[in-house]
Amino acid sequence: MAVDSSQLADLLALARAGDDAARNRLFEACRSFVAVVAKVQLHRRLHTKVDPSDLVQQSLLEAHRGFVDFQGGTPQDWLAWLKQIVQHNAIDADKHYRGADRRDLRKERALATGDPTSSQAAGWVAVDPGLSPSQVLMNSERELHLAAAIESLPDDYQQVILLRNLERLPFDQVAERMNRTRGACQMLWMRAVEQLRTQLNHESSL
Image (cartoon, rainbow, N blue to C red; front, side):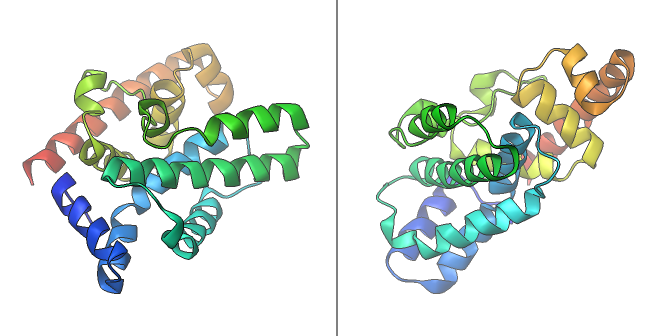
């Protein structure tokens, strides 16, 4: 379900006013966003034991239950709040499955609980598939469309985009993480970027 920024703002206002149908549409519109954030968080922690879909379901359920606690006033505040929930759940999963150092977890959790209205909290990607970062991250509408476009890609295209563009890893590390040669990853990335660009152009024309 693709929505523009004004529609997202309207859904958020109606949901906060008690409209259950608008609330359901709001969460559905943000599912792809939550899914991409979850994949980024799990990639950063080198997880193979946690299914991203489980993290998505858990985070959306917590957001539903805690919706009355959301204090932001804009769509960007809303996306930042959702991102923080995913981050916290990913950190908890990391602690459970990998026994990460407690001090590092506290530091990371402190960063994740910063001001949800700040640009650092709201900005969740640094992707440039032929577009400038300012074009891609112009507003919450761009974030939603980018997430939906990434989610529409085949799994290997998603992975190479997440590693190369969202995490900004060099191709040597991308190749190691994907268990492929550097050359194979570069070719895969070029094809993925082209398909992502096509999908973004398609979304913008709707």
